[in-house]
Image 1: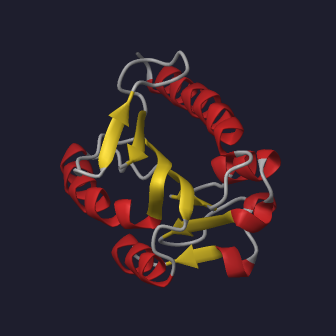
Image 2 (image 1 turned 45 degrees about the vertical axis):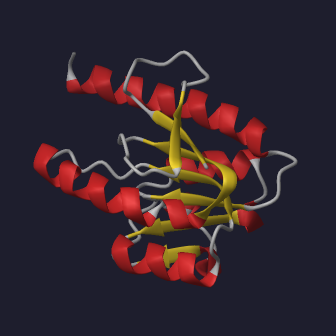
Length: 162
């Protein structure tokens, strides 16, 4: 598969899964966290489907399109190890949905980051909350679920917090 085809498949899978998650979140209490703001496309999609006041976005630096930047009080910048842990300490279990798209494109770096994210993300989630991840995570409180929409295998992973 070409890199372009892979990119299109990834974005299509994201859209399908985010559309499903937006419907899943409606009517449930809790924050929505976008981990890995990047260009801001998925944040913008979440914002279009939910109210912006419940979404926080995290990234190392702001590289988002100006139309897709969260309000300053909803944008958390810095190293994930610092920002995610600080947020969890201030608001433990406050998230009903976390969307994590932090793949680095380097298999060795991804492997290290998977270990870190597996520890940093669960404390953000409330009991029964949903985590969508571009990486396969491992944590005893993360229960891997069948992907609820037709996307290629291992493109995205869906977890519920025990």
